[in-house]
Amino acid sequence: MITQFTNDGLTFDVDDAGDPAAPAVILLHGFPQDRAAWAGVAADLVRHERRTLAPDLRGYSPGARPRDRRRYALDLLAGDVIALADAAGLERFDLAGHDWGAALAFHVAGRHPGRVRTLTALSVPHRGAWASAARSGTQLWRSKYIALFQLPALPERVLARGIEGFLLRSGLGPEHARRYAERGRRHELDTALNWYRAMRLPAVFPRVAVPTLFAWGDGDEYVTERLARRCGSWVDGAYTFEILRGVRHWIPEMHPRLAAELILRPR
Image (cartoon, rainbow, N blue to C red):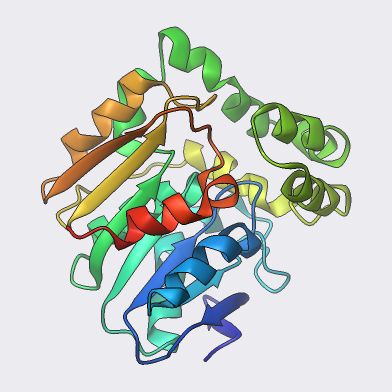
């Protein structure tokens, strides 16, 4: 069992649970979450005889908060995930991600298909699917926060003062909203904004060949159904698109058993 791993001169905290010999699932959180977002999901997966590894990702762990946005390129973030797998002794693993963690999970699976057995992405589709859908209509309006988070200085003030209400209005429960808001008030999330600021860097989004399930809630405030349905065009392997009726954005925190069931579903 491990509690930390290192990569690129950085040190990451990780929750490692379950039998070390069991099939492993790596769980990637999004913004403004941390590894605790997966606590309920991990507990259910462990009951189903899985090992779970949930890291605080780059920008979130105290020892892994570089200030330079160039150090948040997707290839570097994917390298962090592979470093975790290596540190845990995993030749292959199942991979799940939510929000930004889902976007990263697609990238890891595309770049390292020999390491990933299955991919489960929640709420946010493959980055390649955003190319046209995010530039017009309803999706453009829903994505306005992305432009805000790329600005200098202002987003840090938003995180420090107003993020709790923002999270509550989008369907996150009070306990988690308070936790993430408190981290924002302590400026522990300032470097996490570099995930958004790095979106302006040149990037190539690889296609995915591993068995993939993408689940999207039809109550999601940030991703339209039109965009969600585009995700499958970036997956060449076996693919399942699941629409979760009446479910909003925060699937791991608010629907942990459902998230675990999706991860465990045979491909």
